[in-house]
Image (cartoon, rainbow, N blue to C red; front, top):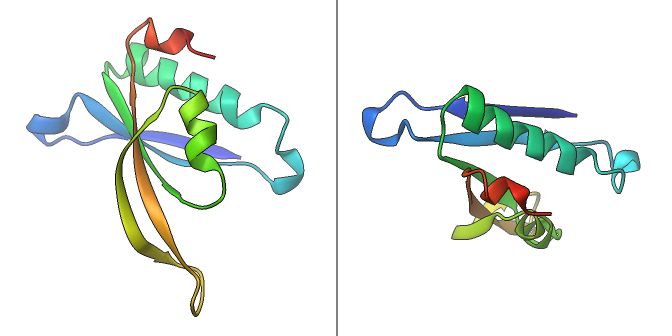
Amino acid sequence: MLTTSRRDTFALITHWGTLHHVQTRTDRHEQGIVVALTRRAHTVARDEMGLEQLHLAARAGVGLETFYGRLGWKEVERWPGALRRGPCADRDEFIMLRRLGAEELALP
C-alpha cells in the first residue's frame, strides 16, 4: 500500500495538494486500510503541510466514487474515456476534492 500527498509550488494553487496512489492489494480490501491511510493523509496535509484542500483522480466504474464520497470527498470533474485498459475498454477518470478544515475531518 502506498499513499503520497504533494503540493504544487505555483503561487495560485499552493493551498491545495494532490493525493496520489492510494491502493492496497485486493486481498486486503475491506480491512479499513485505505480509510486509515486517507485520514492520515488528510491530517498531515492540513497540520504539517498547511493545505486547505486535497484533490485525487481515480478510475470510474469500480465503486470508488461511492467509497470516497462516504469519506467526505466530492466529485468535481469527470473526463469521459480518459483511461484505456485495452481495446474497447475505456473508463472515465474522475477528480474529487476534499476540504481539510477540522470539522471536515470528523466525517465517518
